[in-house]
Each structure stands twice: as structure tokens, then as C-alpha cells.
Image (cartoon, rainbow, N blue to C red; front, side, top):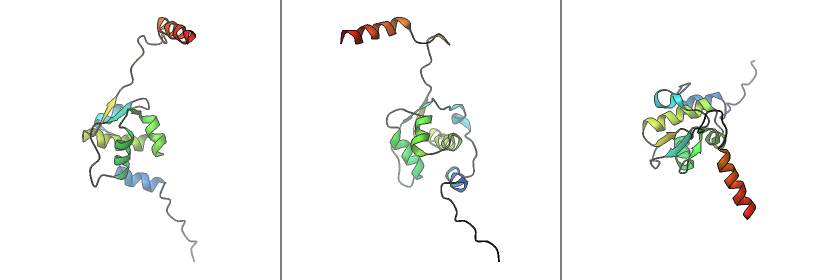
Length: 123
């Protein structure tokens, strides 16, 4: 007599396989996504849409980073990137790169920080 098999864990690898249709990584427009990329909904969810796609669209009414979105949904980056690729290809969301620093490696603008500090001191 063999030992009973443990019940399938719906939050494990099988779930990720089903969510992504067996795909292991994004392609096309989503291949340049990183954790700081901002995602914004461009359209409403439609009937029959996969639950996770609906949730992404709902949460991204205001810009949300891929890292924040992954934390909210409890999904690893590569799984989330596959789902985002679906939505990007369908035109339902938009990916925006974060605003780069004005000078690479130079840090924040010192004059701006001084103005902010001065304004805070006047309060």
C-alpha cells in the first residue's frame, strides 16, 4: 500500500503554471519590465477575463510599480510579468519607465532640496 499523496497546494507551482498557461517568462513588450516600472490601466476589465488580470487592472487605476503590484497580488516577478505581457499586448495597461535622475549618479538636485528645507522651516 502506498502512502497517500498530499493535497495539491493551490498556491504552489501548479497555480503559477495555470495562471501563465505554462509560460515561464514574458516576451515582446514586457521583456523590458523591471520592478520599478509603473503600470497604469488603460481600459476596464471585461467579462470572462482571468481574475488576476481583472485585479491588475483594478489596482492600477493609479500608477503602481511592478514591485508593489507583485506584493499586493502575492505573485513572483516572472509570473506577474507574464500576466502583464498579456495585458500590455491587449492594450489594457500601459508600462511607464520611472523618471530617471537628471544626472546619472549625481543624486537629487541640491538647490531643490534646499528650497524644500527652507519651505519646511517656514511652516
